[in-house]
Image (tube, rainbow, N blue to C red; front, side, top):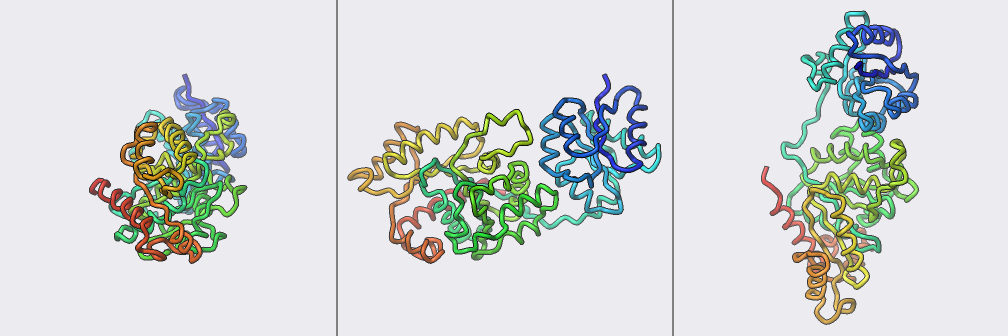
Length: 411
């Protein structure tokens, strides 16, 4: 049975490719000639084609489009003019399965069709156009960076405090670190560390990733240095800006970040709901996509809870929800603001016993309540290491950083 082809190619190359596909010995059949991305996606979601031939400069062709096509089982072959090498780089960054030069004659069209058939047969093309070799690739780290997603249930258990101070302690150990604010409900990393909260940050990185233009240089420019070995990628300043952080684009951001820093600490939102009512609309943005994307990419998930009866109950339920996601990441549990006033005369013992009994967590790391030190750090826009280096809370975060570094696999 012939494989359906969706053709969204501009110019004279379209007719050449249609003729070549129809002359492929019954292996390919052009089922729809699409004028734009909207028509292309509609045809793909209707199951009309397993192969999409598209012009790399097609308006609104971005990573979200390619992800939607892939989700429907459609492979993407992008055609980019050899004289515009940046288009090939952009198409590759957007996730196109194959990038080729558009044909100028029947023989060239047959070659494109042959490469497309090889792609469908899971055989890589036996050549790479020479004009792609000229694409400059920034020097990346030889060791793949590790992502730490800092998550916690609703109720302000201290996710941002943990993320900021963990990143600061990792950097203090001489580990190049990137701190990312991916909380779309109440992101506050910029304010906590004393940066302007209107910086483009993660939203700009996601836009660049969606357009296929994000590279190491661009990401580094968006993540200024806060201290030695510590960069900060600020988040969205208002909750209503959450659509600016689509999961598909963030997947590219995480991948690029791994080449920029040894440790990437991501402050995430609390909600793990996957918007099930929208699952049939593959182009609809997901409200919690940024959090779920970070958790899926993470090597380590630090689950944060508050040390009071309500906070512990929420943490126990949250850990069960987290486990239901089936994440492969290592999990560490941190309990903030441990104090006798909220848990009784032996707060450390009470918290550890509760987590061991109800959540099966015997080794949670406890952060003592040190309100004066935390308030002083927040007022000054500093980390605990800068504002109160002798703080008991700061020592707990330093222990967490050391635990992560010691537990990390050697390169």
